[in-house]
Image (tube, rainbow, N blue to C red; front, side, top):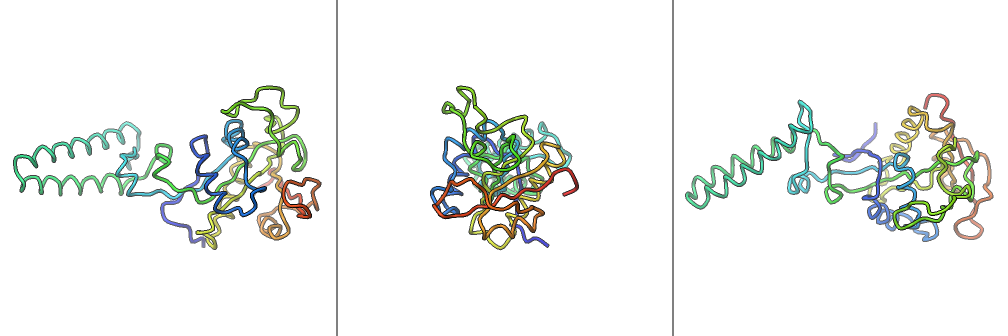
Length: 265
């Protein structure tokens, strides 16, 4: 049984998550050569955001303070907005009453606070509406697609882009290939503060299952050092041997690993 942190969820990533990804890599990846360059992050999240996943912890206190929009148990975005509007009105009424009667103010504030908690904490959250300041990234998987059977130099590279990650010229086979049948995992990073909770296993299994269900590609490929080969083999990956790709310290050997998405995960 997994011992996951409270209020944890996994969602696709987008441009608003770039700073959190960089912060997580700075904290977790000791080798500067193995950290993802910001220009590559921008490109990959622009080219294939649906292939990138993040695991987050929701901060309940910050969520309530910033008025995040929540779905009620009966469901519906409109009802959630009505609930938040109701909260604002109650707070304004409480402030007006405080100027005329201190005792009335205390009673009104207590009632408003109680009802606010019932709405904000007893109902499911719409994670799409959570501001970045209300959530903490604790794990990430970044991927694109390529036409090769395994991770190649071109798959790890990116074409010429502008500051928004938009391609300026012919990619020449570099970077994300939409018609490719191989998913290339560029990064799997977990916050060291949450080690031992199997977050890497959880987010990778979620990623593999989602990609298989959506029939995005035929296989998932990744490069791994000796110390990580066993981790991926436990997830069902096959070790195809040493890779010709070199992108970190000299003498560091990386292995090609892959898993088929054709069968059940």
